[in-house]
Every structure is written in structure tokens, then in C-alpha cells.
Length: 155
Image (cartoon, rainbow, N blue to C red; front, side, top):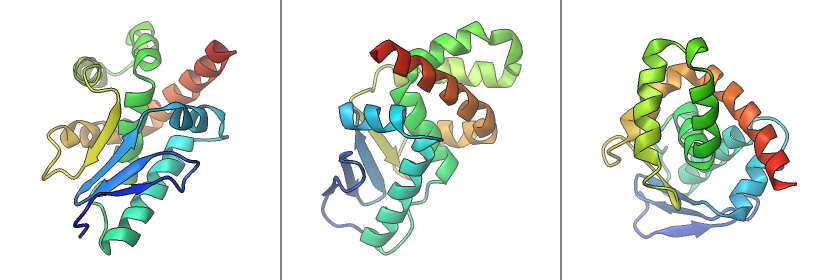
């Protein structure tokens, strides 16, 4: 159990605040640069770091799966790009996934400065990320496309 909030910047200088049942990631240039310029699925690497660091600090696991956490990070950071790609590919997305993502995009746009990643018992939208987890392979492919576009936009 974590009794006071702990700020961690050991992973590529990304600000992560840990507290009991929560990991909060600051959306800033450090986060964007890491996600855009690291090879492979860097959001997955960040999720793995967060889960391991929480385990170290709290002496118990954060009750969030790796893919659910990764998906939450991706949707917050790449909201605009993912929503554009999503709308463009409506015909190739399963109807059930399209409906869930459409609702999710609307909700996320209201919360962009800090990514609040909490366990189901404390986080009112954890169920959204958990429900999207079964589509993680498809979402990771969207991330690869969004990452390429984000890098081009910055140049």
C-alpha cells in the first residue's frame, strides 16, 4: 500500500505520480517524445514500467492489466489521431468495437492533461479500458499508424 503520493521521473523523465490504487501520468513533451520516437510499442513498455514500479513501491500489484493500461495511455495521448483514423476506417472495424470506441472518444476528450490510471474499485472508467482489452492487437496497429503520422506532423 502506498500511503503518500510518490513522484517518479526515472523512466525517460516521464512524470508518473503513484498513490494507493493509482498511477497518474503527466501528458507533456517527455511523454510524447518517448511514445513517438522509441522503436516498437513504447506505450506497452511504459505500462510494463508502471506496473513493475508500483509493485516495487506498494509491495503489491496494481490491479490493472498490461494491455488495459497500455490502451488507456494510447487513447489519451493519441486521441485526435486515433479518432481520425477510426472515423476513416469505420467499414473495416467490427461494429461492436466501433460503438465502444465512439463513446470512449467523446469521454476522453474532456480529460487530457493527466492520465489517471486507477484500479476498477476507484476508477470510474477502468471498465472502458478493460472492455477494449480484447481488441488490443487492432488498437496497437492503429497506434503504429498514429505514431507515424505524429512524427511527420512534428517535422
